[in-house]
Image 1: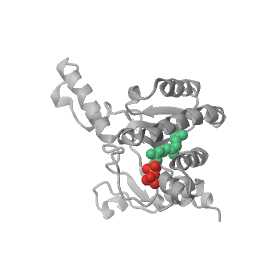
Image 2: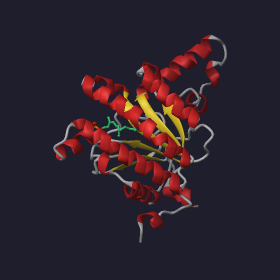
Image 3: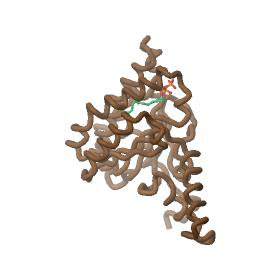
Image 4: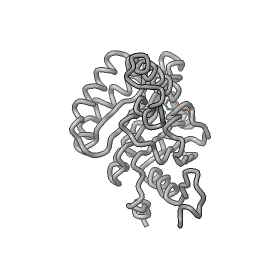
Length: 247
Ligand code: FPP
């Protein structure tokens, strides 16, 4: 039986987030420079976007560049920026054909202007699509997101737009970069590391976490489907008891 046919189509996560890790190790394993790992990682991005779209996932958030990634060697940062621009140029048409929309979360203002322009061009070109929403987390970190939200909220408090009593989970999440998105039901990390690495900290409070040893450039649609099948076999209790869920 094909992996895709083992999926319960009535229980597909609406939002999946992925920490794409292991590009450098993949390159080392193949005796190639690190940047080749990132280049091959783009093929995996293409595969998961296609797979997620096929089975009706609504939002797919990819951790493509963290706030901390700015501290990598200059040449690697530049190569990643160039790769991003190249990938956008090469993929926009295909994404459009597949009815994919693009969104970006993160402190994008600090990215090189040509990258910002390319991203905006792609977001604009795909804005009317109604299929998968591909969310790229760029210059993103969970702590940045929370602090940014706190700053905006503090401003609204100071301007009397809101009152302190009104602050609750729902209100707070409207200040996050993910305000338009449901929390991810499933978060995947590749490469055998068991860390969240400052990704969607607030949003993953009740996400199911899935870790695989596969290095990101080896990750394909079937691996995404396997992760979803694993998710579908979990009992999500949200703090309740198992009995409460079944009664
Ligand atoms: C982590 O692997 C990966 C990154 C920091 C970059 C991810 C970027 C891509 C997959 C390519 C561009 C993306 C898009 C959306 C077109 P690592 O370098 O930390 O690997 P290591 O831990 O093995 O060194």
